[in-house]
Length: 369
Image (tube, rainbow, N blue to C red; front, side, top):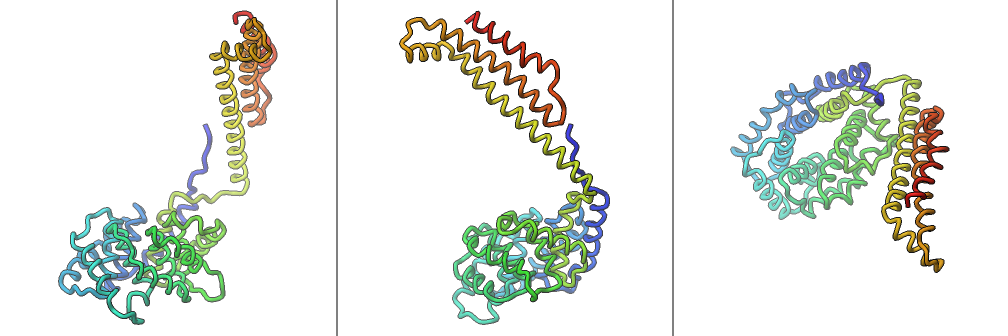
């Protein structure tokens, strides 16, 4: 039985320490409703390790329901809150208030008719991301003008946290896929202009959306994770929610091991792979030879026809002997290949099959054909 590397206590302790510090920096009760809803979604996606954080922010959904019912206007703040509330409800696997999708559509139609201003929804990537997440949660398509606003935002230099949010939201929409690459590049931009919470946003983005994997190098993801684990001191409540989700998902997955242990594990995996390939190759060839024995008469007739021979019996005997011998030889070589993969010699009985068994099998098959 193969031995796998299990999550080490050291790795789990390091990750859970990050989770604990992130919880201390999460938005407080007086934080804006939009931030608390975002923290609720991140905690919901984080899994069992952060279940208390889910309960801590669950009231945000009820508050959103009250606020939207009592103060509704088709403007930017309400559109962002209803979008994020829809996304949080989906993360919790909870059915949202029935009129929220309609409210989001109503707000977007009203915003589309207004002339663009720097205080509109397109001026803030966090607001754009909240609305895009809500559209995905409600199974609604992102309108073209909203994607155009997202493209304009990506041309500006924004924080890694803001662009990571936008990249995640765009990746949820097929129509936004053309912008995902630009958003990911902006979030992972490695120049002098960056922010202290960038590693958390990058790690969150890389761990959250499988759709962005092909836009990222392994080195970029590893660097972001390493920097986030080392620093583990997010300044912003939203960044704390991001690292909370990424770190809690990583709990039980990371391994801290010596280079000798990792080298030994790689060596075992390579041996298992070589042994499996030897078995697959043997099985494939054996299947071909068995099929040949089943259609022996047809093969003998075809060969006799090629050389214009009237008697098919010699061809049948020769083919039967060759196929049976090849079958025995392939079996023995598969055993030998698996043994060599593990650095061992071919078993004696397999050598006997390879030498004696091949001859005997061929002779018997030729005789009875």
